[in-house]
Image (cartoon, rainbow, N blue to C red; front, side, top):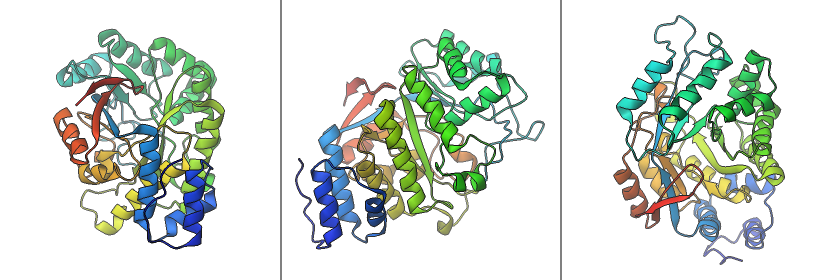
Length: 368
């Protein structure tokens, strides 16, 4: 049992939620809706911070990783994406093995622990291309874990190869895949997906891809892309579907709420999520996802300073160095494309937290 938050809030419903959290009782979607609508953000933050400290102490994690996008050619037409290109369109590219290895070699340092790979759903190349990408990286950089291909990409590979998703995942694991990133989830309701990402995996297919991966012994990641047409209730349904699968498999390592980026860098504030929404969503994620060990604040989307604040709103991970992020920066992200280890440590220490460099699976590499 944790300490009761120091709060001036006399609302009966807030007191009920505090009691539920203190006694380890799961919050309902209705509880989550109350937390999204209350004006008392600081009590929500304090409650989330206490839950996080009970689970992770004062530790905050980061990783030295490299972001790779092997191709931006994509069959899907997601309304939020500025990264994709059609075959033959200006700016379209597909890295083959020599180009891929040249790209990595120019950016590589021996401290990198992970390749984070996401790309387009490219129908111009077969499934073998995606397998060869993994094989080439694993052969030349065996010390780096490979986090590659979203649940939506797994469903895409199944369609273009004629293999089942289980067979696809097994082939990828045989090639050297270590874990799936959390992307492609967006919002796990069909209303949202029909409007925003109609050409990609359904809610059930995305969840199935991760369930199969967990069944094969793979630990994976989960995201939520919020801040467009999604309602608070849909965000909470999304979280509930993730925690139901986590109850079944215990295969997710971390949840990453991702703030939607506008289509242009010059977009006004009214086109961006607010700091209040970003901090509230991180805090509510920590409170709702009671069976997840880690909640990540993604500095690329909310900026380094809000990421630092998020460390007292329930987050215990600030992601990594990235080197050269492209997806969010193809639309309206205002942040730099990478941060150094020194900068990440500085952010964490500035929040009076303990910086811990980790590997992909949250094994400790070094304390700072």
